[in-house]
Length: 550
Image 1 (cartoon, rainbow, N blue to C red):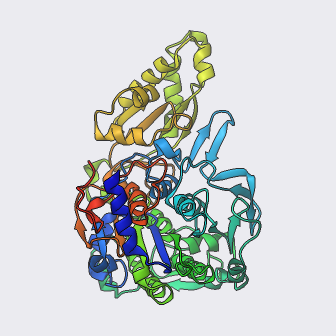
Image 2 (tube, one colour):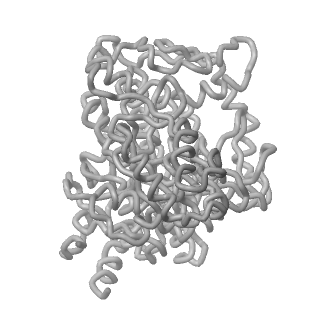
């Protein structure tokens, strides 16, 4: 403990001299696979992503060590340094038995939206503190913590419980919640009044580079891409939602799946930077930014598409512009920048099967198994109970059993769960099935079992967790792709840190986005987030000879 305290003091002294301000910028690029930085490296600039090559500590082997690789859990883990088993955000949504309905991870009926009608949002379902919370407490609430994204769950879960504000977008409006404030700040009001979001109606998204640079990618008009919201499957994409003369809901969906959404997010972050005086007030502030467009584009077009490549190039340019603004406004020497992602994405199954028809990549809908599995479970009980609904709900890869029906049939929950696990485990598509008893009371004997355990929170997770085999996609949609598996294409993401506290270099040691919050806490000399399980990336911190934690 003494060594860690000395390290924190030494690193803190390199971050901020007395009277100077400092700014922590925490950037999450939604659905950014680590391999994108390698595959597209030739077209990324020294001023954008590759700024970290010269100024930063780059961890190339960073994985989320859990199974539920979704937006909510990912942003919660980045901010808390913990996994779902402790911070409680096990998925974007989970089934609540008492309410008899799915619960969204940032839902809050005690709060109201600011700027638009609708159900309230807050971080109340997040358990434990974030790096921003600890910064606020450690500064006697002098520090400001602000988070911005197109997605509510990204902004809210990165902000934490004690933030000054989280801001996201609903249609044409930047909104927030009464959880944080009584009314929107003036700078948000000005942004909304300027109608920046609607200004992109009719904008054209064309290739940023000569068409020959896209030749190594998949075909531009692949039938398994989703061209919804009027985008179409080929360049150029007109951002009007299929309605040139009128702004409709489809326009906003098209906008989200375009580089213009990232531009708007960084424009809003720039407004916050200036209006709130972030990093220039003699204390340390935190600005968290999640760029959501990469996720929407990746879902629609897949990781080998022209669109994902083009968006990476354009995001690179947007980041370069934002780093320059940070330098002009705060000074990069007064900034610490962390960049990561909340998850990766699976290849489109049809992309694989088109090239290798016998590979077996395809789509699987777990809900279609419900009737079949109900029938098999019913055979365990008395004949008159045949046809009972043994499965109460399926949410993602979690199966919630109808405990009342099982009890009425005279069965134990464990016996029913184990029988169902055996039935599921016999299916060709299934890699493994875990019952709640397996997860909670048996040691994880494999990396897969450990990842499932790290995502499991007893009060919110199912009675069984099903893991499909690699390159099988769970869902009901016929085109595009998704994420949510424990495999590297979903778990392997960048972790990059830049600032005076860090030793530049490339680090191949095992790391995780869960390591960012505790590492920043040590660099800042503040308390580590309360639930953190991530390690301090000591090897990248200056002013310490302490070996990496085991």
